[in-house]
Structures are given as C-alpha cells and as structure tokens.
Image (cartoon, rainbow, N blue to C red; front, side, top):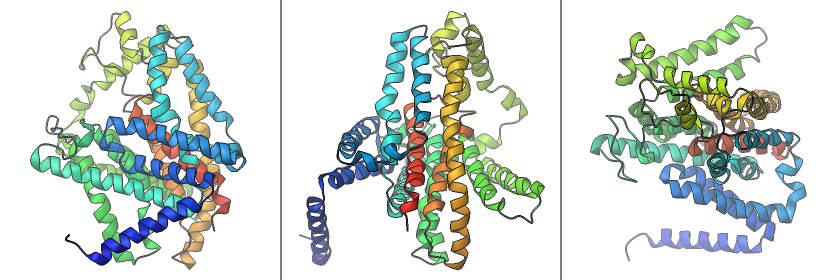
Length: 444
C-alpha cells in the first residue's frame, strides 16, 4: 500500500480518539455532535445538489429533536427572548395559504419550504455554543465558496462544471447549481466567509493570512464575475460598505457626513469595479436598464396585489394570478413563476396583512441583531488593538448578520421568498447570529 505510514497511522489514531470521545459523552452531547456536523456539512457542501439540500436539514432536525429532549432548558430557543417573532412568520405563511386563490397549491408550495429552509434557524442557532463553533461555521462557508468557485473555473475552461456536468448558459457560468443564479448564491455565501480573515489572523501573520484568504476566496469572485449577476455584486459591495459603516460610527470626532459618505463611496467603488470586470454588465447602458424584463415582472406583481390587497392571491400563485387578469410579461417567458423582487413577492402572495407580519419577523431580527452585536463588536475591536490574538467572536457573528441584511438588499432585484436555496441561506445566517447572541456571554 502506497502512502506515508505515519500519516495513515496518525489519521487512524485521530479517528479512534474521536470515536472514544463521542462514546464517552452524554447522550445529549452525542446528539449535539451529530447536529453540529450535519449542519456544518450542509453549509460546506450546499451547492452539491438538490437531494443533498433536502436530506441534510432533516438529518439535523432528528438530532435537534433529541438535543431538545435531553437539554431543552439550556437550548438557545428556550432562552431566546425574541421567539415571538417566529409567530409572525408562521402567521404570514398561514395568510398566504388560507386566503389563497388556490389553497391546496399554496399549501404544497409553502410546505416544501419547511424542511428545506424554515427549520434551519432552529438548527443553526443551537450549533453556536462557543467561539470555536462559530469559527468552524465560518470555515464551512469559506470552503463552500472555494470549491464552488473552483468548479466555476473548471466550467470556464471546459464548458461543463465538474460536479454535475452542467454546461454554461449563454456564456454565463452556472456552477453545480445549473443556472447563472449561482452568482447570487456565491455572493451571499461569500459574505460570512469574509470573516475567515479574523480567524486566520489569530494563528498566522498578516502576510500569510492574506495569502490564505486570497487562496480561499479568489475563485468565488471569479464565479461571481463569470455568472454576471448584478444583484449578487450589489450584495457583496453593500456588505463591505456596511462593515465599514459599523466600524466608522464609533469615531466620535468624525462628522456624520463622513460617517455615511465614506462607507457609501466604498460600496460604489467596489460595485463599480465588479461591474467593470464583467463584460456583460459593463455593456449594459441606460437603454438596457430601461428594457430590463424586471420592470414588467414588477408591474405584474403590483397589478396582482391591487386585485387582492389585504390577504394576497396566495403563495406560489404569481403566474396563475397574472394570467387570470389577462396579463403577460413583456420580455420573459409566460411561465415565469416569480416577480424577481423579494418584497413584491411577499406582497402579492400575502397582501398587506401578511406583508406586515413578514416584515415584523425579518426586520425584527435585523434590529435585535444590531442592538445586541454592535456594542460587543466595538468592545472586541477595541481590545484587538491591544492584543491581536483577542477573541474574534463578535467579528465573526456580525458577518453572518451582515449576510442576512444583504439578503434584503439582494432581494430588491432577485428571486422570491420561498426559493429554497435562497431561503435556506438567509434562515441559516439568522440562526447563527441568533445563537451567537444568546450564547455570547459564555464565550471567553
């Protein structure tokens, strides 16, 4: 047998020690082990296929149920003060089903979001017990960006992605998702992965950390540019601007104008650079923007909303609703199923009542996250000026919060609320920063 005998022996020893440690743990700890690593794999291998994204949350849910059974009182959910915000989400979904023009179809449509997305915040929040857990989740995001980006590089040179053998789409990269919406995925996945810098700086020099960051993330930027998704580029640019806004507001001697304009200028510069590097985007002029099919899709959603203003036409009823009005999109196929706008999607499907409930849920977590993370982030950054190897707990946590906020930004131009991978990412980030906040006081 070829290979290094010492390496094989060390690997076998490590696996044996891990097996012994797991067996010696209490049942609750063993179930937590399964919960954490099943969720970790879900993040790290997220783009690998539809089946994987359907199965892994269910595996995690089984582990979560046992964790609750053995130690409910110490769970994050039991100690989460803003737990009623989830009731608003469930009520919004109920409105979109009960008052739908086709309740059975809406039930099936919204119901598929449960195992693929809506259980993920509860799974994710229990996976953050310590700073080490949080750093491991950051590494999972960075690994996902790295390998999916390299898959995009392979596709650019061969014409087919390595994992699923999907071809490019009109010259745009699709990765293993099979669609150029992979640019939206990679953008949202990169945002929490940016905090890998802080994780690396705890162990390595500035130069070597920068090298490792570049090695992990360059392929993600390559895929983002190759997929040419403008909404994804906007989300990445806003993420950097928001990080700088969070950091710059602590300087009391700086005038408010500069506190806003400097992060804003950074956002515009990054967005401009990404657009400039993307020929398809660079070639779109004012006329191209005016002819964008989204304008028509947004108008259709608004017309549907005006027909069902209070409770909406129902989840997943966009296509049927505008057809019932005798309408059709100006540029897209008649089979289009969503309005390419998160807010109009919620509005047409759930009406004013459901929209308000949904915004209370989503914006409630945004505000709660900011209120709890910001002062701790400031204290941690101040301490890091004295000790470079100080805890990076809140710097990692805030990037998951930023990822959740940038999902809102991206939603102005892309997808729908019940899009499975889209909902899964946002709910995972919500759960991670919620768990980080609740268990944050335990972190050394």
